[in-house]
Image 1 (tube, rainbow, N blue to C red):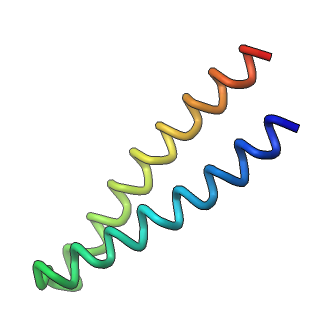
Image 2 (spheres, rainbow, N blue to C red):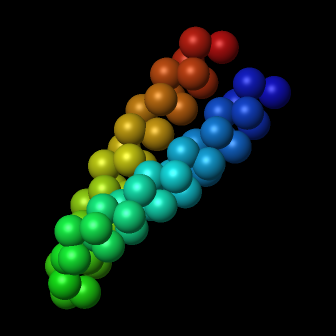
Image 3 (tube, rainbow, N blue to C red):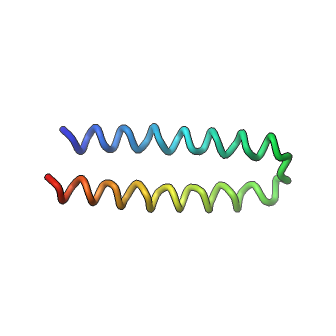
Length: 61
């Protein structure tokens, strides 16, 4: 049950981070060419953070 909640929280968190990244790109008027690099970097880093948290929760149970 804890793992299901963790996965749902992670999906919500990733969605919120992407929403904030979009707001940053809009407010700073970042060109379209650079936005894909920003999204890729942010998503990779957040995915690593989520996976490390998931492994920590998984081994704690």
